[in-house]
Each structure stands twice: as C-alpha cells, then as structure tokens.
Image 1 (spheres, rainbow, N blue to C red):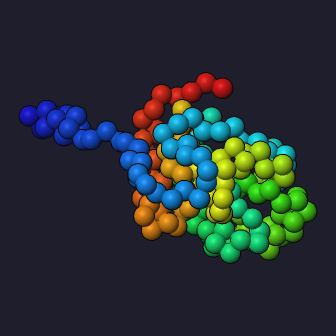
Image 2 (cartoon, rainbow, N blue to C red; image 1 turned 90 degrees about the horizontal axis):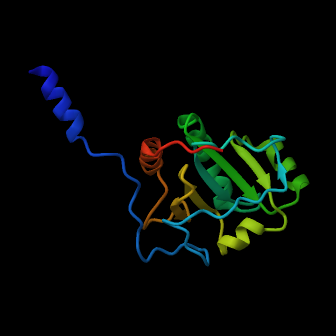
Length: 177
C-alpha cells in the first residue's frame, strides 16, 4: 500500500519545465533567440587557456565589459551560480575588449567561471547586443531558454530561474559531441 502511494506521488509530480518566454520583454538586442537555436559562440582568447567542456551542460553566456558597472555588479552572483550549479552549468563571460584589459581586470576581481574575449564581436553582432550586461541561457540541446538584461524587473534572471533551467536540462536526453 505504501509503495503504491509513493509511486503515485512520484508519477503525479510535474515534470521539470523551462521557464515560459515573457512576451513583449525588452531584450536590449536586435535578435530574439528565445526558444530557438543559439548562435555559435565565437572566441579568440580563453583566459583559462582552453575552452570549457560544454557537453550536456547549461551554458550561461554573459556579454560584459570591464568598464560596465552593472556587468561588474553581476560577477559575484555569477560566481555563486557557478559554484552552486557546478555539475550542470558553464558560465562564459564574453567581452570584446583587448586581452590585456581583461587580464588586468581579473588581477583584482575574482571570476570563478570561464572568461573569454572576441574582439571582432562576432557572437555579439549575431545576437545584435545593444546593451550590456546581456545574457543568454542555453540548454544542452542548443536552445536559448532565457535571454536579456539579467536584472530587468519584468523577467529577471534569478537563482530560482537558473535552478528551473538546470532541472529541466537534466530531463533532456544527453547529446553526443
């Protein structure tokens, strides 16, 4: 009897789902990739020396710059998320600044996630980024599950939303690379 109650409880639990797309949200980007295939992430320099392993991970792509106050303000939260979701999440901070500028900045600012530069702005131009910070959260099937300015009141990127995306990502079939 108890076993059948437990099985019924497990079967009645709602499946993990990705957050719904908020219609009419200002993205601060010319192109809306939400619910669509993510653009290719173009990188010239990885500050860790090599690209992180992205296989079966949620990717949080953060367009940022060292001179951007709101970008700098999100770094502690990004560090926390990388630690909290370390088995499921890879954060990539992508700047179009010179490698020397980023290296100098990183001497005084702890960034516990992958940091890269694309001085040619290839990925940023594909997205059409108009304001930073701008973030995209991509599930392991290559679909953008959240996009926009992380602190926007209408649809903020919160720890709860990241957890929802991570749980839904786990439910997807693994991909081979």
